[in-house]
Amino acid sequence: MISFLKFNFFDFIDIIITSVLIFYFLRLFKGTRVPHMLLGIMFIFLLALAAYIFDFDSLKWIIQNIKTLGLIAIIIVFQPEIRKALSLLGRSPLIRYFFGESESRAQKIINEIVLASFLLRDRGFGALIVIEKQLGLREYIERGGVYIKADVSSHLIVTIFTPPSPLHDGAIVIKGDQIIAAGCTLPLSESTEIDPALGMRHRAGIGITEVTDAICIIVSEERREVSLAYSGKLYRNVDRRTLKTNLISFITS
Image 1 (cartoon, rainbow, N blue to C red):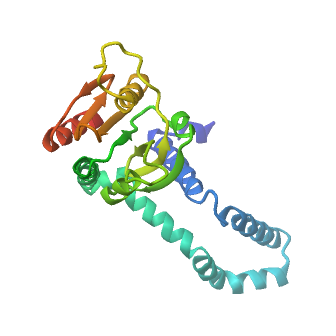
Image 2 (image 1 turned 30 degrees about the vertical axis):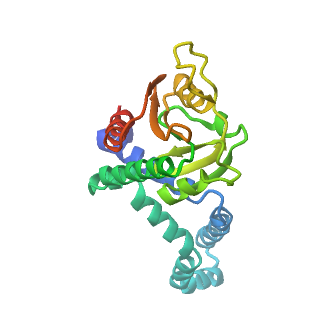
Image 3 (image 1 turned 45 degrees about the vertical axis):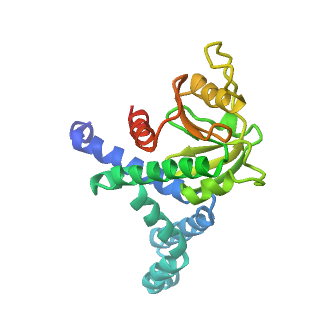
């Protein structure tokens, strides 16, 4: 009862922070060899605990002598995973926010998307570039899409949509700073207000924004123009500045 009465707001914050750290620590190492090795370390820890509880002198002597060496060995063995964890931590939105890098990173990604859109237009290639927001697009990615998970790059986007690339007829999906998938099939809009002169690519671009909160850039190879679809509305033949301004507005809304 006494210990319960001593529990205060800061203890609650301490528990929350510790839980979040443990959660992200385990998620960082998901799919690696670390979980299996942690089981081995846990076994050694339990063995050491038993040695001290039951006063096994020989076992205690061994544990005391390999303690420092074991710590160094763990750092060496887990070096790739530790490096990866620190890298992911440094790239997290929260850390980038505190160091003022979040906005500049978003600007860079938008610049790459805008550059790719107009490079494709100038070369006469069509494209569908979908930017995921809150609602996941996994359903549409799995309709013939191919997972890529690569950093957003204008060169990569142009390469994907340059014939005879096997993925140039579908859409790419961008989430955060990564191109998640390419060759995706999007739902077609059934709106009667769409200009009948517009083709399937525009209907697909508008369609995905009607059923999700995604943003879609449509590059027309016939008209040599870049359009933007959001919330079921189509903004036709936008220039570079308008596209960039609207992308910033829609992404942050």
